[in-house]
Amino acid sequence: MKIQDILSRNAILIDLKEQPKNDLLTQMAKFLASIHTLKDPELLVQKILERELQVSTGIGFGIAIPHARTTLVDKVCMVAGRCVPGIEFDSLDENPVHLLFMLASPEDNSDDHRTILSSLSKIMSYQDMREKLLNAGTPEDFLTYLIEGENKYI
Image 1 (cartoon, rainbow, N blue to C red):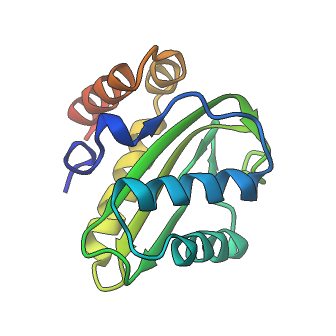
Image 2: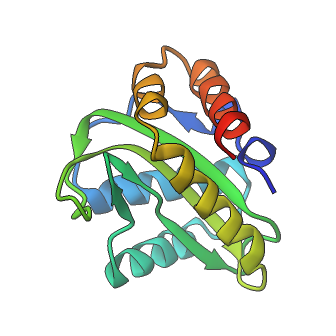
């Protein structure tokens, strides 16, 4: 499974506002639920927030990959967001988060879930990728850069 198979231009928010972490996660989870027409957005919000309580999904370098497994989906679903000012996220490196990739995965499909998490982590480890995504002018540009990075680094 590849990121480019599950992320579309209409699932990318490039102008997120600075706000409390849980508010942002709620906003993105509801966005994911609406894009993928999930029946119970509040359950997805609950799952995302519960997962975040276990340990922050802020992996460092301004990146967070909030995710949850749920019966609401039958395949991995994803949305992405960018917040230029940054969000305090309790990240591993204690820096604000600027790029977010939210996943909802089926409870019974760990392989695809792990594959996407691993791919995102690897792609985002490259400074040139982070800079391109931070400077993307449109959701189309954001997606193009992400696909280029996936094709180059994975």
